[in-house]
Picture 1 (cartoon, one colour):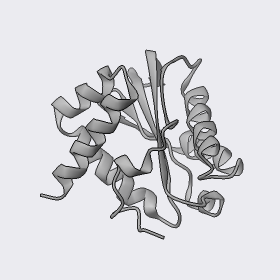
Picture 2 (tube, helix red, strand yellow; picture 1 turned 90 degrees about the vertical axis):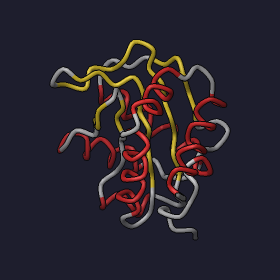
Picture 3 (cartoon, rainbow, N blue to C red; picture 1 turned 120 degrees about the horizontal axis):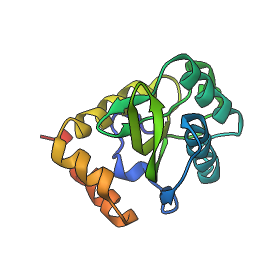
Picture 4 (tube, rainbow, N blue to C red; picture 1 turned 60 degrees about the vertical axis):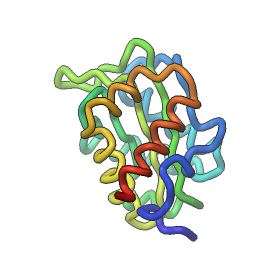
Length: 157
């Protein structure tokens, strides 16, 4: 299996992994939707969703710039069959607490500690204010795929 830190971020997105125009009642609903989207890709078992919720209950996955990166706990790694990523856009945003509103959730799954590398690579993209704005304002799946491909290109420099 390819190690997540070497895999293309854009390559982790299946065609149906990008869902825009969604609503969520709260951050736990948003995390559940991310988990269910990962289950739908076949990358994780249903148990991974609870692992994601457990992580969110212990520490917020909001990282700034209107983006949260929900992911499972280390104990949830056994529910992951392959690295994957989903991008969910919430039109009205989701109250993530402490005055933070997430407009985009990037749900990730990676076996055995691969979360750290994926979160680090995503955070690098989001540190670029222009790329973060493009992610928040994307209205099509293609725009998001192009954005992550550009982020992959940045990481190779």
